[in-house]
Length: 228
Image (spheres, helix red, strand yellow):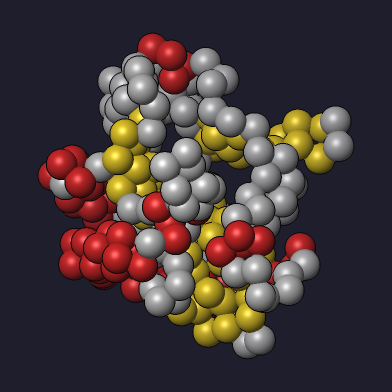
């Protein structure tokens, strides 16, 4: 994948690029729509106010005690993909265009077999000021697209901050070296997802929701499949 000129924000840190996508007013409008759809959020922690809007492979693919993961249900994927399309179609299309320009590939969604990019929502809570987010790598493509062989140059992860507490960002590790890249509201942060990383949630304890459009990309032939 090759970055398009004019979109990269300075030199990358540990392979991280930031791309201009939305202005502050647009971020406020989309954040308000996410908050308005709170009845459709899925709670992801028993005690803490961490939610998603949409299905996420890293949370919903694995088999549970009651049966296959929710992600594997065509009916549920159709339901959530339809919800995201109805309320965030323009935002999804903008994200597709930004990533297509950035990579030089024909970016597309694959709703017939994967979830559309969706939202992480962390409502204010004192615990989020600490390093409580998981330390992980993004290997979901192995589950969602097991038939598509992929190397490090074929995958990416993107995050578009819509509502952003001060100091929020991303830690990444290269060997024993730690890097930090601050998120910027309206700027899409892109990396390959394979370096060990951790979200920094509410380090300053600001009374503001953290709302992020979240997704991944997988190169297949001359296209970039976008999913979550």
